[in-house]
Image 1: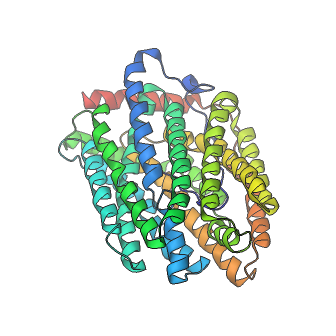
Image 2: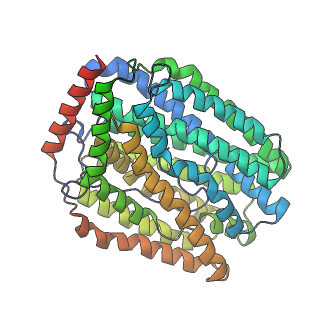
Length: 462
C-alpha cells in the first residue's frame, strides 16, 4: 500500500489538494461519484475483484500493520525486554522498502519482464513473499527475524507498487480512479480488522514465539491468492523499443518538472510528520491500562472498521466536497481524534476512540490517493505514484521514532504530553493551506492533459 499507519496509535488522515497549488479535483466525469462508464463495466468488474484480493493480501502480510505486527511486538517486549524506543527504532528498517518504492516503479515502467511491465514482476514478488514468510517460521532470534521480515517487506512493497501502477493506468483509462482507490482501502482495512483480532488471539493461545510463527504461516499463505488472480488483469504485451523508451523518458522528466507533484509531496510530508505515539500507546495500554493482548488486537480491528466506515461515508456523502473544505475538515477531525486518546481510560472508551480515529483517517486518505492517481503522468505511473506514497512512508516511521524518543527521554514515559504535542502538530497544518494555494477549483486543463496522454499511450500500445 502506499500509505502505512501505526498499528496501535492514532491513524493519521490524509489530505486532498488542488491546482494551482495542489490539484485534487478528479476528472469531471468522476466528481461526486465512484462508478465508471457502463461500457467499461466488464473490465472494471474484473479489476475491482483483483484489487480486492491484492489489498486483502497486503492487509494480512504488511509487516507493520498485518497479522505479524502484534505478535512481533509482544515477542520482542516479553522475550527480549525491548523498550518502546528499541522496538520503534529497530523495526523502522521495515519501512525502508516502502520508502524506495519509486525504484520498483521505475524498473517496471522501463524494463518489461517476459513481455509485461506489471504481471511478471507481480508473479515473482508474491512468490518471494511466500518464501520470506516461510523463513520467519524457522528463526527465533530478533536479528534473523527482523532480516526475514525485511525480505517480506521488500516483496510486499514491490507488489504494492505494481498494483498501484495498475490502479493508476486503469483508473485513468476507465475514468474510475476513485472507485479503485476506495476498493483498495475498504478491502485493506477489512483485512487489517480481521488480522488484528486474530493476532491478539494468537498471543492468548500460543507462546510468544509460537504466536509469531503461526502468524508468519498465515501471512505466507495469503500471497498465493494474488498468483491465482493474475488472470483477471489484462495487460498489453510490452517490449523495449526506441520510440517507447523516448516516450517513457519524457514522462519521467515530466514527473520531475511537475510543480503540482512537488507541492503534493511537500504537503504530504508536512501533514504526516508529527510526533507519533503508536508504539508508546501499546506500552501504555499494556502496562498502565492493563489491557489484554486480545483486547488490544480487537481495538486495532475497531480502528480498521472505522476506516471502512469512513470510506463508505466518503463515497456516499463527501465525494463532491471542494478540496479546501475537505482538507480543513480532515485536519480538524484528525486533531480531535488525536486528542480523544486522552479520554481513553477503559475498554469502552477505547472502542469509541479507535473507531472515530479510523473514520477520520479514511475520509481524507481516499481523497489524497485519488489526487495522486489523477496526477501521475502517463507512461511513468509506477514511478510517480510510488514516489508520492514514499513521502508518506518516509514521514510515518520518522514520526513514530521521534514520538517514541520524546516519550522515553522528554516526557518520562507519560503519554498525555505526547498526545497533546501530536494534536498540535496536526492542527498546525491548517496554517500551511494558504501557502500551497489550495482553492478546490476544477482543473479543466489537467483533464485535457490526461486525456491526451491516455490517447497517445493507447496508440503506442497498439
